[in-house]
Amino acid sequence: MNAQVETAAPAELRGVLLPLQAEQQLLLPNTSLSEVVGYRMPEQRPDDAPDWLLGTLLWRQFQVPLVSYDLLLDPARREIGQRARIAICNSIAGNPRRPYLAILLRTIPRLARISEETLVPLDQPGESPPMLARHVRIGDQQAWIPDLDALEAELERILG
Image (cartoon, rainbow, N blue to C red):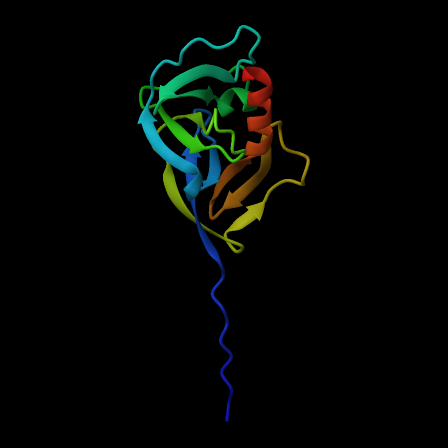
């Protein structure tokens, strides 16, 4: 008698690919995305803020900082396309004054299924630009996994 061995299906997560202006994209867990809204001009940013902090938006009675990962990856990239969107993401730091942050997008995000088999690191830990944790391949696409802890810490330092 042959014994059949059941193998567990690989764990799969739902992710979201956030397209950037620079033909690159970020990869986040789907649960971190609160809403996607049309682009609107942010309010004034602090004078000493870095270029990648575009300003703040009023969303659900919160002043939400708007971040451009495009400017983190390429400081010369300043264009905002006609189909630009803003991803409102849940903060992971648990700051009650700033429970959200916003990321400038090129267009509407797409869902992605993530598993150990589909996610392949393309860099070594510590090789990524600031506020980006890893460069990965998911299926046939490349994406950056943002370091939201570092981003939120820097926003707290800048905005107080």
